[in-house]
Length: 351
Ligand code: NAD
Ligand code: DAU
Image 1 (cartoon, rainbow, N blue to C red):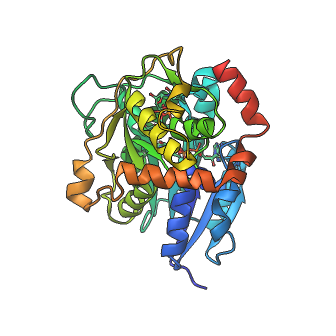
Image 2 (cartoon, protein in one colour):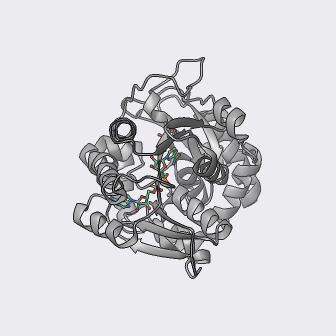
Image 3 (cartoon, rainbow, N blue to C red):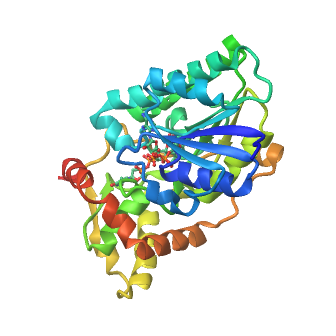
């Protein structure tokens, strides 16, 4: 088969990456999709069982920080485009081991940028480096206001500082070497296949197992939640229609205080599990706050809406129900990812 684009997706075995890989493999049979992933604790090929035998899909196990390996990979395949999602992504882990975040998120991005640049030989026709980033680079909001594409960067955690740094390098390569890039900064994702260290899947798993729900601080922190498949749709749109050298914010228009979200989750889980109303709420436990905890994130996604016509298609209530159903139907997936390393992480984080 003659493909008309070779697309490298990094971090495709992770949460968001697996939804992006699936969308691209199924929608673009004329693209050859390469999924490069180191399969860290967060990477799981079970996420992609349904597309693993597709003729336009290949998985490559490898580390984006391994310069010689990445150079050789670009030499072999001469990718047209990169959609870069591989990262260390959990804020709590970044507080315990910041250097791991600098290595993957900063150095790894640099290694990819260098390989993309050197193998293009200065001819960027039809090429694109698409960097997936986060709203956390903007720091925190007070009770009002929204993050726009012009909000100054002000990261507060080692995770967000590493993502901010990688964003700056992508932009700098655009300015200095004319490298064609686009960046998107997205709010909190939730949905199927999210590793149960992040708030929603962690709490679903704990409710199933009648374990305490550790709410940090007073629970009055606000996040803007987006269903992961809507993020994947936005990525597809920006990849094909986004303006080079631009940043787009992506958000859910959907702010929730943690404590309200947790209560809604408890109510929905009680219904699904046939438990009497109020059972799961009794598991809520207020614990020591996250250091440097950002008070509020909220995205102004009007640029992507106006310029590219994107907006979320799934309501929060609907998305949360689909998410809960998926975790309840995929106990084996949960068992696989919550054994071994996960147990020792949990002990260190919460005890
Ligand atoms: P995730 O932790 O679920 O997945 C990350 C993937 O990257 C895993 O498959 C992992 O194996 C892989 N990886 C890690 N280090 C690697 C390395 N050195 N080389 C190759 N692969 C490596 O993360 P996610 O939540 O899916 O996030 C994906 C991207 O989206 C990240 O860049 C993150 O910063 C960004 N993002 C996430 C959210 C969110 O709410 N989860 C929101 C906005 C932006
Ligand atoms: O905003 C986008 C970001 O969203 C992404 O860039 C990150 O990769 C992703 O992890 C997420 O970061 P958060 O720190 O917002 O997500 P997390 O699920 O870890 O926490 C959500 C909120 O819930 C936050 O205010 C902290 C709180 N929390 C989290 C955990 C894990 C708790 O109260 N208890 C917990 O045990």
